[in-house]
Amino acid sequence: MSLDSWLHLVHVLSAMVWVGGGLMLSLIGARARSSSDPRAIADFARLLPFVGIRVLMPSVILVLLTGVGLVLADSEFRFSQLWVLLALALFAVAFLIGGAGAAPLLNRWLVGYWVVLAVLLVAVWDMVFKPGL
Image: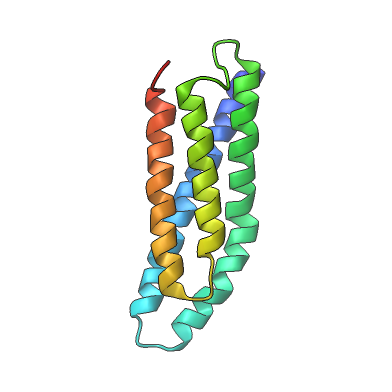
């Protein structure tokens, strides 16, 4: 197996963790918000940074590093291609919204992270269909 294959594997697995982890946190947050137990929101507030630092942040970093590595390793890909520029822009938007959305208010976080998930789904579409290539 080539370095390209390993980079691609880690890139896809990291994206799966980022999207899947974010989706699960959003569902857990929505459940906490609708719970009649007042401790549910406090429990979620403690869970969010724990998971964020140990699961989401490493996957976000790996998505970026392996994505850049894939472009550098493959002579067919260039940073000037539309799909690569779109992927980097979508990454930046998701990263900024996700960072700003991790506010103490659960409703704000949930709305922000649903936007992040929508942006990530567009990024997945971009990776699969590579517009402009």
